[in-house]
Image (cartoon, rainbow, N blue to C red; front, side, top):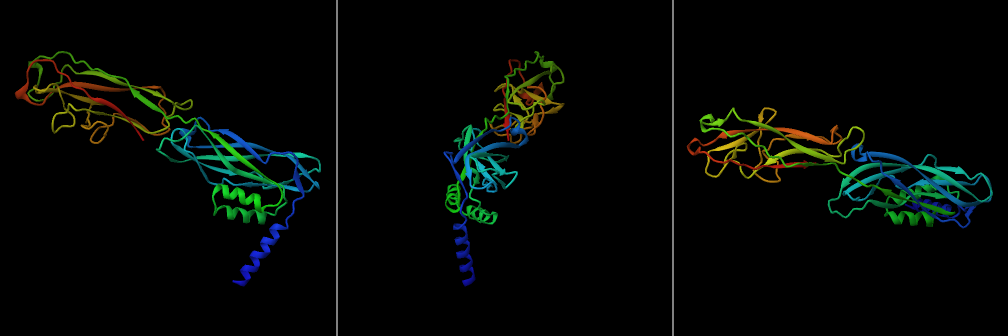
Length: 339
């Protein structure tokens, strides 16, 4: 225990004796860089950009004095942005230090790298299109050793963001520039909207109806048309997974496929897609028990902004004892589900 106490005292004394040989002349210690997240980010989920940072007004006593570059945002959550997305940024520097190289007033520029990745979503709806991150990098002119700088960074991991910056300013000798970063992310999500569709079947005679089941005559095929917006890149890729299904309150009791044509008629309709009877949800907003008519994964290529989904409607006898002439009508809702 005594040995540990002596070591701590020696380190603290050493840190306070690392006198700076450079000073600043009328320079701002705070600078804010700016980046705009790449437009393809909703598809790729990653983006890396180089950001220039210039530290000016440096006046040193010798040409061999150094400036140290300290990345602080090594795995930092940023956001939420306007779409509720929270990003993770990782800042790296191409070099940890360099010689000032002159005794005259000068400046140093470094291009630090910002890696951007998707982290999570915040459903609160409190996000914005731009977020400023304080203290993503620091530059120090005090000639502190890498050992001392690393000790400071270890301490930073145990305190909050502002506490880390305060600790750097108080502990490291010399002047410390703080580099902030504003991230612009005008996030857009792919959406597909279904146009209204009316399928009109030709009149059918009672004699053309089967005793039960689907009528093979007088079927009609038409298309559900989706208009898709916010597609990305030359391949028109989507930013999220989507699926299309139907729901209806006109389903025959006990069936997920037969639509009633009228309250007192035993003739209704069935829908088919790709020669398969379509199962329909009985609960609006729920895809349970419903067949997927069309789907695409995130980053899938649509090729055209308009998607067509063929549907075939046919007459269907579900209660032969109630078959009677008259107008028939059933309604189903088209849903686009997003994940």
